[in-house]
Figure 1 (cartoon, rainbow, N blue to C red):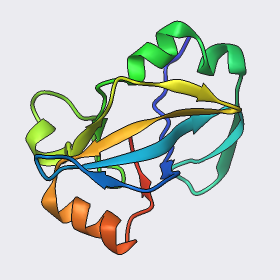
Figure 2 (tube, rainbow, N blue to C red):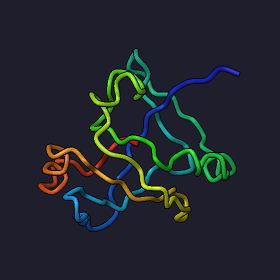
Figure 3 (cartoon, rainbow, N blue to C red):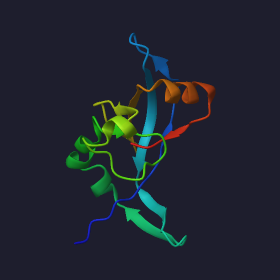
Figure 4 (cartoon, helix red, strand yellow):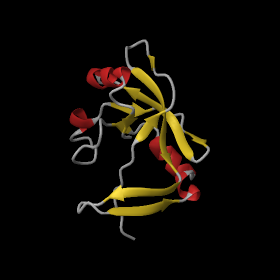
Length: 127
């Protein structure tokens, strides 16, 4: 089976709140079930089914907690070698099913991204 990387955006779903350290905690939808459209390099669209059995499996839900948050999509996957360049925060550990969505809370740590979220310039982030 071939493995491919697909990118989705998580959307904020509620009021953000500041932590005592000055970080921002944002309730969000991280992904969903259903048919998702992904743009290919040539500009065409590929549609893929994200089945509930896959999206809500215990292993899938567990894999989201602690994942890095990026501002939009970086040119490569976040890894230990580039985390300081791309990671802007992380997904908190409390991941849950919310209808057809996977919901959680984002912890945004980067000042510039906190400012963008508070101004309303960023309503979608990439876990």
